[in-house]
Length: 271
Ligand code: KIV
Image 1 (cartoon, rainbow, N blue to C red):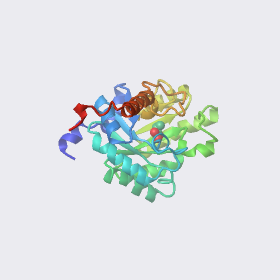
Image 2 (image 1 turned 60 degrees about the vertical axis):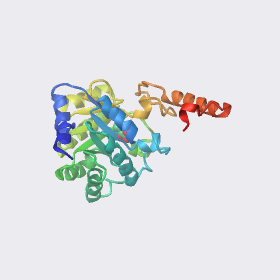
Image 3 (image 1 turned 90 degrees about the horizontal axis):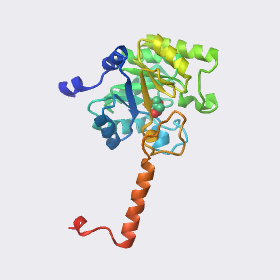
Image 4 (image 1 turned 120 degrees about the vertical axis):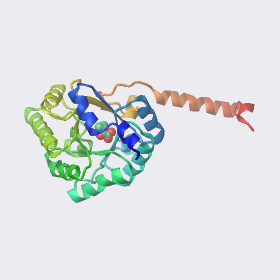
């Protein structure tokens, strides 16, 4: 990577600084080269290659089947496109739970093989030691609390977390533990807005919310949800900014019609 590229890129220091300056952090997911180009050129701060890949791109029912090799493959494509944003690779189920050695090895793959600048992993105090181990090796870690989709079976569904007092207290404690363990930011997913506000005010590292209200230091959405490419299931927290599935279907219908009627290709498309 050239010196110029490093200077122009959003780093963990920039992200932390944005909290200090009260500037909102904008994060979106991307999983391939063309969409990563779009979000980077639009000026997004962080591109997350989320394991939501499994649901919105690979057609799995949950994020659980996603493998390290799939994540590396897609992160490589994203990294080839992104010049300005920070690229964060999402550590898939079972890539960091078995041992912190495994976790460090897999986190390293995201940087060394796939060109990411950081990793994200789900969980609270139970991943604190792993977070410490990975950050000690110089790999930035984004934490993820609240509704952590890899634990969907333990939660009994995709439900708001931290509604009861004891659960809110645990999320607050976990956030402080992960900050202390070296995480540079924390995703808060599907937690009450008031809890997210308290966590945000308590921590020195930024919070990035998804279904966590307006007071987080930043926001993240799954790209395919917010552009209406994946409308099989739209969570309450998603704002849909476009309906690309409708536009794409219209385009495909017109193409089929043109081919069947002999209207395509025209002279200008021929040699
Ligand atoms: O996998 C993902 O896309 C995520 C975000 C929703 C935070 O974890």
